[in-house]
Length: 326
Image (tube, rainbow, N blue to C red; front, side, top):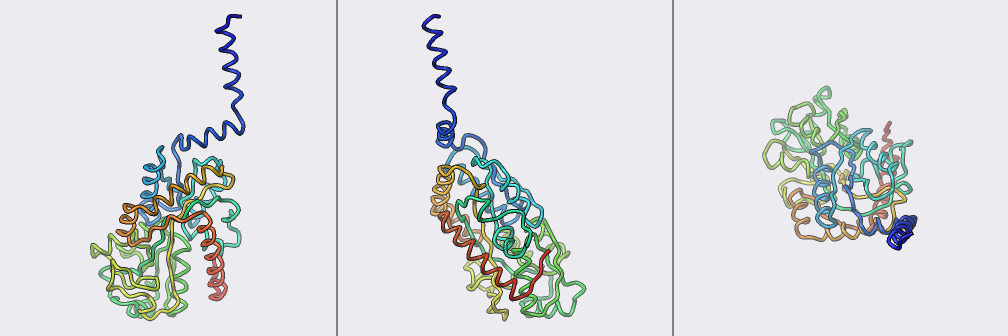
């Protein structure tokens, strides 16, 4: 055998021997080497989708490769996390998570098809944002008290849109506190909820600020209250629900990144470091401020702690209010 042929064979054998842990480490070093999907449980145009696309672009800028949003609505937001939980844990399928299908879902659904603490590797909480109590600009109600009176006087027309329990639960709590009737109408995204309010198919709604603010600032929808404990600077004249006479009804939602359980720790840490850097950047802060959202960029441990606290809080609300969900 000629020397060149011998060296070629040896080289080929050595290359083929780079497998197992060494090959995995090499792949992690190159991450991301191909397109990364961030799966979200809602249709395009909603608040989660809006924030997710900002985060995806920022991750693309920070890590290279391509991060793309995959909209997978269904099951009140449960289809997306169920899909991600069952996907290959290689870092190329991530979950763009919202509270409804995660912490609230855990509190209200007895047969949720995934365990939010066992089936996922937390990466980072990226943003949180309040909701607005909204009516169409032509609705007669100018205040929350007037809305409650209208709902009681028009029970056959009293309804609200909801794409997930993160909206249903606080509105049902609102109904208990005020005695107002209203029927839930399911939609696939907050964008569809907005469309239903604009078209008069629903009479009022709680919608998160990233989806709601454009229509409010354009004057197409009227904000009667914000669902947090203090007013937001962008709508300084809009009272909180407590100021409007409805105590203890607090509603916020958030956007977080998680990976399937078993995703290699170096990849999770690389994503977490990028997420924290993004959360602290001036450009990201400015983009979130324009949506009346709060930039976060937490650690994985902080995300886990928040999720555990929320499951406990919402479980208590559901039990105390005796709210039933299918």
